[in-house]
Image (cartoon, rainbow, N blue to C red; front, side, top):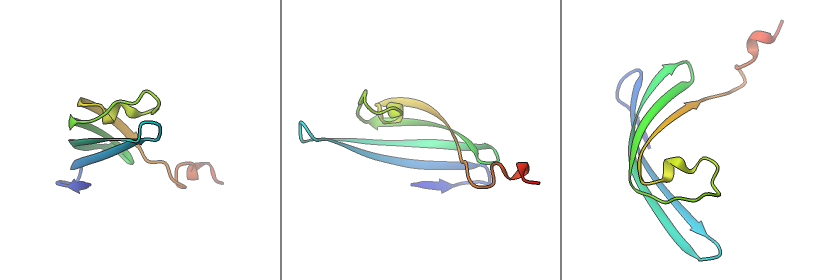
Length: 86
């Protein structure tokens, strides 16, 4: 869940769950983050997971680990290469 607090700033609450089929176990995570819009469709966020889980099989699993994290994200859509059209 994300809430815009200003034109370029947002805050978020993150919840996650992970179920493993072999162990039939369920792990949970809970955290909060603050994000800033760097430019069009590019954000940087800093957050903290109060509790979470680790899974080496998840390619981008660092944001589910317990503790602090930093994330850079970008949005790509149909307008990305529009400048190439004649």
